[in-house]
Length: 207
Image 1 (cartoon, rainbow, N blue to C red):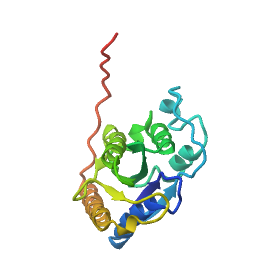
Image 2 (image 1 turned 120 degrees about the vertical axis):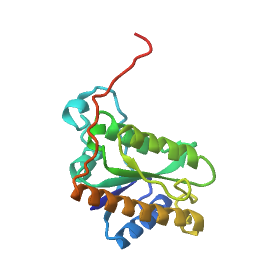
Image 3 (image 1 turned 180 degrees about the vertical axis):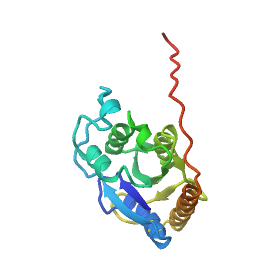
Image 4 (image 1 turned 90 degrees about the vertical axis):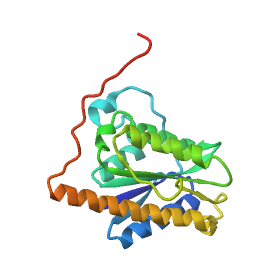
């Protein structure tokens, strides 16, 4: 079993990384393989709504989004971490998530998922909520902790490790995800598969 943790921060080894690393180490202690994937600090195109990804299951912009799909989509689950910019996730992570999930929700169904928001002071709950919207739209099994998945840390000063409660939240998240993964594996071994999804029904309010 393998979980990929996505670091959406422009800082490769900043506070978002520290939060994800805490989860990663807990997963590893539970026998779950992990890898932290950094989206980088270069510009990421936003979604242009062309719809080609519905057919291709990839984006027409061949960049870090397609790199992620090519390497990791067969993994058992994902944790998406992002810093807070203006009470939401940062712009690059927003573009990454929009293009990763748009038209490709079927690639994520039945996989486990979680979100982590890292902020200096405020906006963490809003960012956490936005990240979770991608997961809940895609029929993922969303994993909780004992609090909303957030850690406090300032800029690139790497002080997230001083948020003891936040780090405990990350460890509990890792333990909970490990347990669910093992439950799913046990279920599959006994013939219990993820429910077959109905064909999506769209209801437009203006016709």
